[in-house]
Length: 426
Image 1 (cartoon, rainbow, N blue to C red):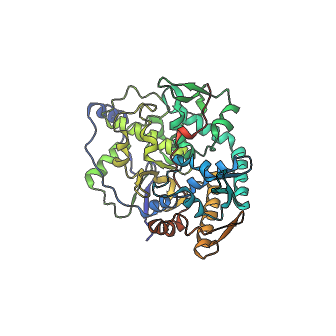
Image 2 (cartoon, one colour):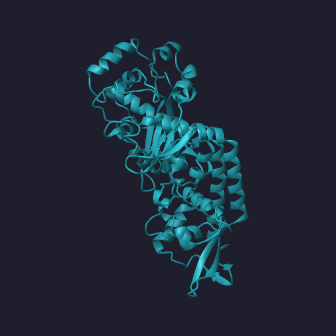
């Protein structure tokens, strides 16, 4: 059954007058002890489930395409396994063989005489990869602005590369952005050595034109003019059918929406972290962060290490549970994914970045291989004179059932593994 969304747009709750009074009141009072229940949203869960394999497959395509002959042995690909977030009991070769419409298997012999599987790309996958490069080139300014805004959210305009790598898929950055993007903009970005000896990326100059949140941009249309002038911006809110919001929670949410909105790009050091006003600022930070992602979602673990860079208090991710009308936490695929509700209508992303369209085409190519394989079209393939039956090679019973379930999996969430990345020399 398709879930029903009731989106209360900005200003839809109605607004109390006297926002300055509410500001003073909240600074005298601590956080309201309100806990809203978590309710399953099948539509948004389907978005996450559909994201299961695409990311890992796209990373492998980028790695293979960057090799001189566009073909790599399995032991070379295994060096990057940590970036794929595959289940521990799933062999990399098994995962690759699930998608014969994307990867082509051949064999070579080691000096010891052992037969080693190698993987290249099908013409269709290679064509999509080149189209992706063109899309990135055509939208390079959007990509640069997206990266600038992310760094402008942080203290010192700096993020460790390890943290940035965890977000690069969600931001639409290319796999090798450290070498293909950053060096071409020395006036904007610089690699620096952090106090903990890690390498970080620093923004060199502040752009006042970019220091406007998406909520502020939408306020002229969605907000009453007097509320926009007073700074009491409200967030779009929507709940799954059957949520059953209690009267006490509704009254608190109405009042909370009328509190002053602090831009995520402004200094918030004066705010008391124990107040609802400060909480609304934290909600605004993550609202803007998710707006910067091209799928309007990211894994919760990707933002858990942003507390210090974003100058947030302890247990800052609790705002996701306290505001289920703004954020939805999906618990599918053995992880927690935070989704911006307002960005979706059921399972459909309302505004699609060109990279999203390309990823959806790649997802259809992945699914085609799974469906064709289930029909037996890929039962045997030849590689360097060696016949291979992908159904026999290192596939356990539980892995076979996993493959059947993944027929409908179109996308995959990605967690970067920094040690496998090329080192940046400072």
